[in-house]
Image 1 (spheres, rainbow over the protein chains, first blue to last red):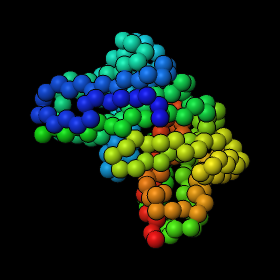
Image 2 (cartoon, each protein chain N blue to C red; image 1 turned 90 degrees about the vertical axis):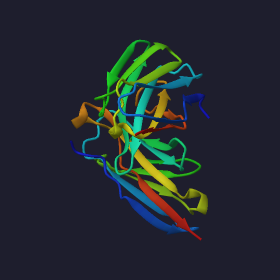
Image 3 (cartoon, one colour; image 1 turned 60 degrees about the vertical axis):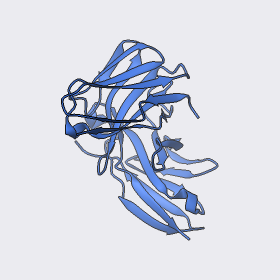
Length: 114
Length: 111
């Protein structure tokens, strides 16, 4: 399996608090992605990165920010968490985007915002 | 935005062949179609990908018609351990060539 570690694996917090999720990879892949998964919506792309300090928005980026200061780490931040951001968050990596290059996923972070 | 769509659920029995179709009318012309399998409490796992016609590997086949507006994942002789959710992933040109997952098909394999 690809070396992807998400932390924390579970988190419960209150509305209005900041939350940061971390994705760490040991594969030296260029692309990293953050998805959220909700019942009835499948997986939706939040943000992705195509290199250090290079990021772009996905389908559901409102309320989220990301940072990538090192190749191996991609951080997802909820500046002021809301109950609608309760979800399971998945990080993924790939060497290139698309063009026959599959993504490899972490095991997810279950985030509950009360 | 047009969506990438799949049946919500399917039932099958052990030993049968299962075909799951994904509709992706707005697929980008220059990219592959990828299918993933997901078990509870795990991230999606790559199964197979293709660009056109037919692709086969040790676990599945993928059939893609010439217009590429749909694709069919074929699982031969399923077992109980194939019970999972299956997702297709394409680039949607209506969404700025953004990677877009289908909603997932929950496959239940019965003994």
